Length: 562
Image 1 (cartoon, helix red, strand yellow):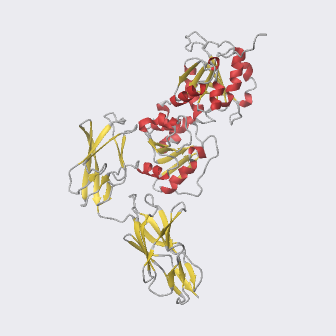
Image 2 (cartoon, one colour):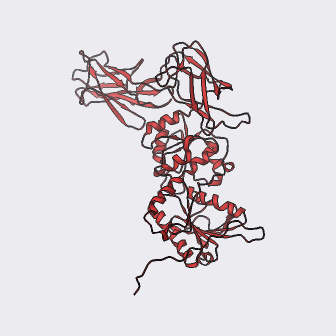
């Protein structure tokens, strides 16, 4: 008896895609989980952006849904007919008359089985590099990868497959984004689309809590649990999910920056849609986002909150004529950015521009690479913006105005940036913190303290802190593993610093205390442990004195009682 060998039926020939004017065109039938406008995920909008041109060229395109959705009757979108699950009982019958069958994700095995049984060419779209996706696409007549890195991983996966089970043909189609459908004038919010954990919903709200000077817009997604702010934040707004064809009006027109702290993105369609309007995108460097954003992206690892705060701070708008960019003397300027447009008012994208600090009497200069030049060169992003990171421009020792001009390929560009060096100013303020505390003679330890508030966006260096007991006798500092000062940040995280008690027992001194303030309006708290001695005078209302840097404030009010 001859041995039995596994074979597959002869591969069908894909029909030619371009019909003549008299031709009926191809019948393209797809079966997928969901479809716009009810299901608004990037994979579905990629599929639609590929099927829509087929319909425009005269082909008959029908999409059958495999899952119940909110739309229960057949509808048409951009020439594509969509049959909801509720009306989909005839799919298997209708699929037999198709010229081409198409699918992605969990529907691929069913559609591929129908295609093989009827010798109909089958097209599979691979949106990820999961082994199941590649396995299900094996043997398809055409596999469409959504990026080069997904194609490369696919080739590695298929290296161990027999030749007869390899895809017939493969092609990379990066998810088409029709810029005119998304281009708009950007708004003033920091935006995240889809608040589920894998997209970085929890990280998004942490960034919002640390940057009260920004307004945040969280847009609910079409899948996954949605993370809402753990507490009410006055600078945050949550919007319901938005159909892809309404993103321009309801999302991008309100967005100043788009964040994508995604755990996984095989491409990142939202990033490309945002860039159609020159909206900067800060993203975790997944292979897909690195490929889609390229040099125009700003990247920060999703578990490095400080990197996100710094990246966002670098995108603050430059000051206008009414509020010129300024810094106290002998301090670095904060981050700022400048936009360059051509004579048709279009952005000068990805261009090398040199900023030149005009001669002045303030003694200011750029500062990088250990040098102190009067020029700074960098590349503009996709929107024509050039970012000058915080600390790159150093204010000099003298007060006064100054200007920055720009050169492109050695030619002066029109316009200028007005800046000024102001008087030295404190970057934070102190005030008594919390509700009054009560100390009883020889009683329990209590923790009076102060509230620290950032008064500017300038970075605040570590400070020397001195805490002094009131002049009347009866109070004492309490050692708790040493004499400690505790700093609590806006997320309620605490850091303890060990200090030195002077010989008279009246003053504690702490060196190198980081105040945990990020951006103007940010608040932290500081406290120490004290108790009342048996001989403390009663009744008495008093307070400690906190000196932080050059700022001084009384602590929380202390009631001393018998």
